[in-house]
Image (cartoon, rainbow, N blue to C red; front, side):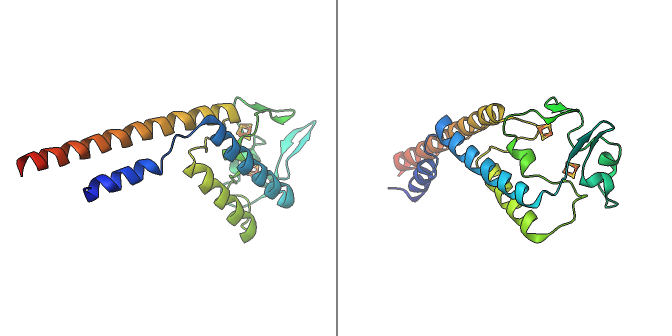
Length: 168
Ligand code: SF4
Ligand code: SF4
């Protein structure tokens, strides 16, 4: 078999159908790990009080803390944000693996979150200000599109090989 065709089939092979169940499993696993990391380090220290909500960035002088200083956190404007109770989204994975620049960088915390964020991005599951159902839906659409493109690519390679054989 032609090397290019073999390669194309390998590519397709590695992109076996991505199902909702598979994505949900990966999503829950990554979210659970992110929750553990955030729970262990608690970098944001979000506090809800009568005067509003504050977080670590509110007391920080580091660049990037200006938004939180306005007493609005990084969730400002998000449809899932409840000013009196915090985030109302179901498992917002991308948000859970992100930290604003106002948080000083203790290596293990950032390294762990970065690794989880990279894995979420690779699985096309990282969508900011998005809950689990919307993130899964967006990931499914992105995977379907990618698979369609891979199949078109394979058909194109097959056609080129056939044309080449006919001309020989
Ligand atoms: S990421 Fe930054 S702005 Fe957002 S809650 Fe944490 S400390 Fe506050
Ligand atoms: S979805 Fe993200 S940005 Fe929105 S409230 Fe929840 S944590 Fe904040």
